[in-house]
Amino acid sequence: MIDLQLLRQNPDVVRASQRARGDDESAVDAALDLDTRRRAALTSFEQLRAEQKQIGKQVAAAQGEEKAAVLARAKQLSAEVKEREAEAARLAAELDELIMTIGNVIVDGVPSGGEDDYVVLRHVGSPRDLAAELGRPPRDHLELGEGLAAIDTERGAKVSGARFYYLTGVGARLELALLNLAMDTAMAHGFTPMITPTLVKPEIMRGTGFLGKHADEVYRLEADDLYLVGTSEVALAGYHESEIVDLTAGPIRYAGWSACYRREAGSYGKDTRGIIRVHQFHKVEMFVYTTVEEAEAEHARLLAAEEEMLAKVELPYRVIDTAAGDLGSSAARKYDCEAWLPTQDRYLELTSTSNCTTFQARRLAVRERTDSGTRTVATLNGTMATTRWIVAILENHQQADGSVRVPEALRPYLGGLEVLRPVAR
Image (cartoon, rainbow, N blue to C red):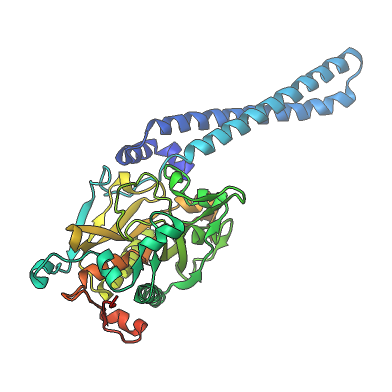
């Protein structure tokens, strides 16, 4: 939720942010109008309430016809006070609902536009010329995974439906190795490891900003009124809901490991082969509570940790500054790291890190204590590793015989295994 003071004092900043996102900037004017009417209704309520109290004092002293008149006025005031109070409450509810639809105010320098309007900040590493090395086109991750007896999408679909899968044998071991390496890397950067709930209450899901335009991508258990998370960011954002946190010793950093669920609504026909875009996966997610002043520097630290992890698994990648229209409502700025995907001749998103400034914390009432009172904190998040990384690891490290070289950093987590070899069938 955006800061109401910012909306009042700098509406043009909010309008410009909405415009850059491709969102409706008339929502800003509608919110200002509701705020003005709400405050007027409150002022009227308070004035009438004060008069009601004065009339109440006069009733006891009044006599005869005067008392009848005073009683009549008291009755009239009682009705008017209730009416103004109800009007102020109604306008406040409408304002809260409308403000919830306005995205976070973007940081200066964020590219305008949509999904294709990102800015490439840098390329790191050079893709292998696999066709030349192998003497044939490279195999994709599913063909490799099936040859290794590591991925089984056929039985995943039989048991659970499209976009579900089994990781078997070295596939399961590879995911565990990857996620353990990610957690160890996060811990080395000062993050506290967390195993988080994967079901959350509506107010927590709403507070993190996931029940807006993309609510149809979230699984809901109607009988229990609970939501399945698509990232442990949700549970970690809710961890300190309605609390005052102590940031005097620096940012609070958590690394959450959880199963994640996404309906992938509206993505039919996109990346349906293999395990690129699936309904269930595992992820290690970094989450930070910090001061507003430290948020930008913390964002850079999250990106550096992600890049360190990509270097450990030896993947060529690029870093992009995501355009405003592709940020999601909570993020004020987002950087993605995308690894090269040889068989599709394109880059595939593996990590995102977002600076959500005070947007989530304001919704969830997470504050810090300062010399001048309490104030809203800033929150940030970033991916350390997910199941999807297996796609890039298999394809980029494949060898001519269908085996896959294990990146050195992963070998200790695989019992020293250096090569994943095809399984004879």
